[in-house]
Length: 220
Image 1: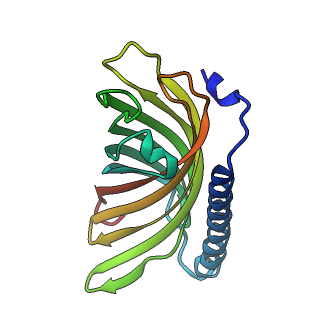
Image 2: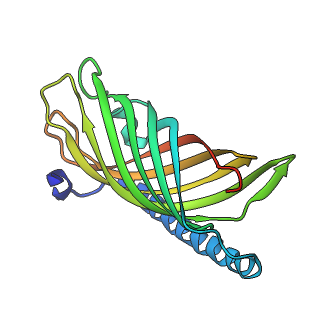
């Protein structure tokens, strides 16, 4: 299914610089994860017993924002995402995400509709809640993860392409009473193979912004 990923290519200087920049982002996220986990340990040691592991569910809206060379291939798109997180303890979560972006293929005449499907699994380190003023609070988080994505033009007789992707993320969960608002920004690096023209796969970059809402049970 991922045959396009194994084509041997020589990355251009621009791609190498972009990959190096992304790796710095990933390593920075890893360092931030470690710092957040370390900072929560003293507080956890002095706090009451931790709540049992739980699940979180968000339906998010947002945008897929191509950057660099990707802007010549696909159009900026509205995005819908389903986010499910398993939270074994307040400072750490395992998050799975399914995203659907409704874009257009700019490299094909007529710019036909292009569906971008993204499926990821990642890890998040979460900080303690901090007051913002009034009843509002925010809990920052950082994460890393990866998965697969596909590109499909439903109205043309071309086969979908499938690619691997990795991301680094940063965001916060804003809460007031039982209402929680999650804002997340992900920086993706992925392999991209055009659906038409027979061009080779290349490394591309884009950014996803997601905003989701959930309601927490009283006393949770």
